[in-house]
Amino acid sequence: MPVISVHDKQFGPFVKEKEITIKRLIFILGWLCFYTSVTAQYYLRGEIRDGKDTPLQNVKIILHSTGYLHSSGVGGAFGIPSALPSDSISLSLDGYEPLSMRVNTSQYQKITMKMLPYMASLQKHYLLSLTTNPVLPSERKLFVADETYSALVENGFVKTEGDPVTGITPNVNRASYSNIRRFINMNSMVPEDAVRIEEMLNYFNFNYNEPGGDSIFSVRSQLSSCPWNDEHKLLFVQMSSKKLDMDNIPPSNLVFLIDVSGSMDMPNRLPLLKSAFRKLVANLRAVDTVSIVVYGGVTGIMLPPTSGEEKKKILQAIEDLAAGGFTPGEAGIRQAYRLAHNTFIEDGNNRVILATDGDFNVGISGEQELESLILSMKKGGIYLTCLGVGMGNYKDSKIEALAKKGNGNFAYLDDEKEGEKVLVKELTQTLYAVADNVSLNLHFNDTTISAYRLIGFDNKKTALEDSTSALEGGEIGSGHSMMAVFEIVPAKDQLKRGSEKYAQSLATVTIHYSLPGSKEVLRQQYECVNNYKPLPQLDPSFSFATSVCMFGGFLHSSPYLKSATWDDVINLARSSMDVNDPLCVDYLDMVLKARKIYEPSMRKKRRIKRKR
Image 1: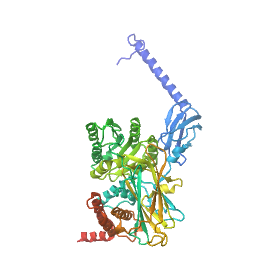
Image 2 (image 1 turned 90 degrees about the horizontal axis):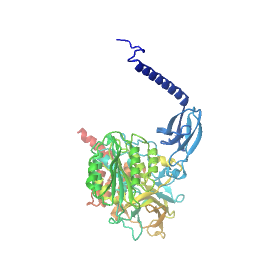
Image 3 (image 1 turned 30 degrees about the vertical axis):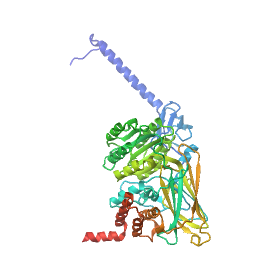
Image 4 (image 1 turned 180 degrees about the horizontal axis):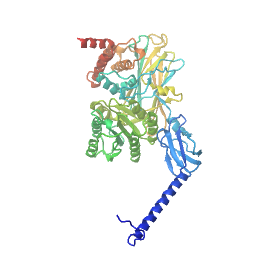
């Protein structure tokens, strides 16, 4: 091969130009190396947390020497190159006080941001009921397979003389009942913390009592005998909410937020949700607006805001949903709420409907972080309804937390019939609120009641361990009937017929609530009188509710039902049920199956039969 000389007349100019180009590259590389060594000789690292030592993600960080914007990542950590040994940064995050500070860039920084007062109140742990001196349980298994449930603490007896007032947060949630049914139908025992008795009672919407006049609520009470303790009584307090006129309900702005990740690719997950949403679409009106946001292998807007009149277009978008990929729940939630705010209808029903198994695995996924996200997103009157599905990896604790913090409700869909019940038959209860921030206070009369125990409305263990926890108001839907049941210890001789104090009040119920879109707190009061009737003489709805309470107590291993039997639960259900009501028939069938799973004698009989 010939050697090219730099003096060659043909190639000389090209070689010279090449030599100059190489020299320039060497100069640029050298300058970059020098600049990098000078400008990036320090690396500012650290972490950002709040006053409760919770890591803060997505904090905006501005490095003053460069003006560049950075942000904190998972665990609140950050790392920023700097040319200076000492620099200044500014931090900002919604709900927290802005912070500017001087930092040593060679030292690891531990930074605490202070919540703004309104955010601090939102971040508190909230209680479902307010009673005193709870006894925290020993640790027990909180999950089955990869399912998770919040640890609950059963309410105990409270002495009226020292603590006559208790509070309750009513809600329209019914998820616990259908989830319990799923376990029983699988011939499996139910995780104790999956049992929420108030949601089991909610499932039946007992004996709805229409409020009169302009009242939002009607209240009735009943005193009766206690089937598991002859010395105690049961006090039923039933609250019914006003029914909206279906011809005049406000227009809806609904955003379906649907999990289409790989974990949803099973018949009882995405296909079940598609069936439920199709039934909901059938009831939409032209004034309603529907959008669909999905998250999974693809995250984004599947259907832009569309009139409810365009059912074919909406149904096609639902039909096109397919599962695959990871579960970036955070990104989906942010997208759905942005869309809900952008299409917000003044004086309308603005709601995100999140449908998922709760198994978030990309972005923030912890319950506290998800609660904070929902709190920041819901501002401006956006409600949240959560629909849970699946088994094995169902995250009940996460979905429950999201619904509560999102000013909404949640249900668990174990089959297509349940989807129809929640989104068609009980559409107004599920999607249309008649009151916000609803709470009940009961002031017991210590001359007639010496002690009381609220059945259900059990609190999370974490909430009870937090001394700043407070009672949180709930959302109540149209035409809902909520039942609260108390086991009470009568004051000596005060609740017997013939006593001169027989007609005395047992308790005063005060309902605190606000109308949707209003911050004004309204009140309604009701007096619980001593109207004692033995259990067999009661309105059947109260007797049936007693059976449900006993059933929930057995599933939850309640220590207060030691003298009761499975036969008591079954006989009470049979004697009070409406045989023409499919829900009652389904309940009795479930109790009969549960007895075979739980009752030792029944388990022993099955073992003997198998040996034969």
